[in-house]
Image 1 (cartoon, rainbow, N blue to C red):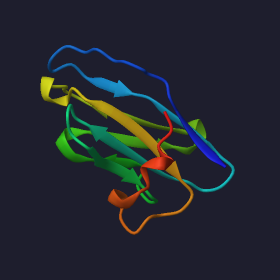
Image 2: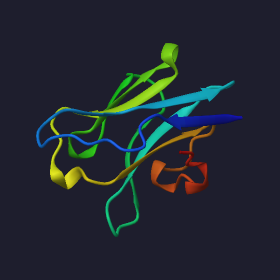
Image 3: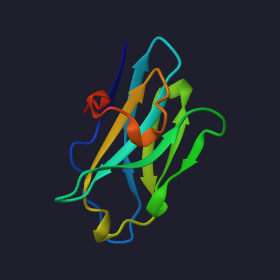
Image 4: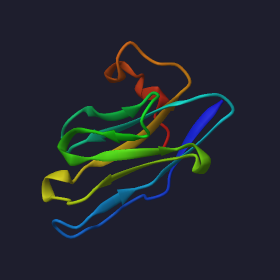
Amino acid sequence: AQSVTQLDSQVSVSEEAPVLLRCNYSSSVSVYLFWYVQYPNQGLQFLLKYLSGPTLVKGINGFEAEFKKSETSFHLRKPSAHISDTAEYFCAVSDTVPETAEELDTNLLRC
């Protein structure tokens, strides 16, 4: 079994300040990690994923996340936050790779 823990229930930052959203995972097998975003009055949207290879992953709108196996972390960050980034962010883990990351069952989301 695998799980994720999001350590920040709410984060407030100033316009153009850096932002960090922390995600730690636990698993006894290799994992695939994902970040999703839900803007106000909108559905869940895929943001970025780590499957393998380079550990620094670039996503949309200037977001990035770094997979650190030794720390079991996949923290999301953005160097310069904007008011348009106001949303809920969800970290997800899976031990299988879906056809596309966008098809990842939202039942896998664990907050």
